[in-house]
Image (cartoon, rainbow, N blue to C red; front, top):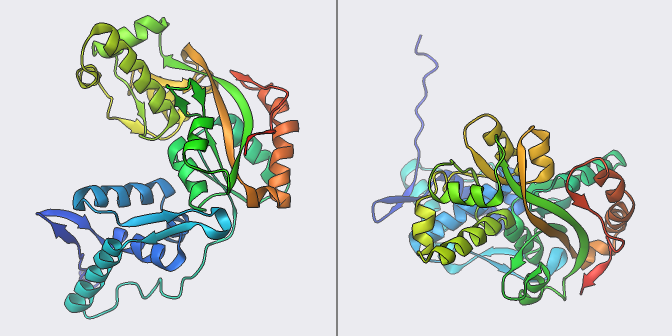
Length: 354
């Protein structure tokens, strides 16, 4: 009955009594070293790209050192590499593994070199973009889409991890969307900013609420929130609303956040937010209008936001890049006509910076 039993040993490294590196993180670091790409690491290991970011960020916070660094240059010359601390952490894991278990830890991964090829979009979640990608796939293009949030998408292009990123980041100082972030990161040599579209974003709930009611009931703890992940443009929008209300009330921002039930509950897409509200796991969330309508929810508009694209220059020179721009100009207006909350302007698909 017990003939199938076999021993297995898990090796982890601890720092100040806290686990900081297990097998998964060690494999991530090994593959970043071998491939020069966090995205390649995620694809080889079969784990979400966002999880790779999260595992590295958590370990860096625990150890108070940088483990992975990016260098600029776009898809052709950019990438990711281990810092001295990252190499040392990996060396210590490999040494401990060999000493305790008498074997090399990554034999099944040995020999992996270079990036895995593919047409890659690392973006803030958007339903119109999802439909555009589906249309392009029907035309025979091989495309991988990762909904990692606006900030992670931006850095993915900067690091050469992705060909393009959809984003909707609002700069309070200039009162502009996206362009200030493109300029501040010095992306001009490797990427351009392409005009996208406007989309309506607001509160989704099971019963009608005014905007003021939604904010009031959130801060009072009467409504349970389902939030988006840190680094997403939607999360930043909600944080701006909370900050404005905190200033109006004359209370510290952290005090306002502390009163919100579910603020720490995070999901990665608008559809996940809408589903949580629809099934009663949460009472309210911030979504694009199409997501709220898809789940039959009440929708309270906040405003129209700009969803644009950072596109690698090297990608624009390829046929796939030209096909993406063509799809933006010709197919996006057609698809948007079947969805709620999108506004298409005549200059969609045009370069607006770079």
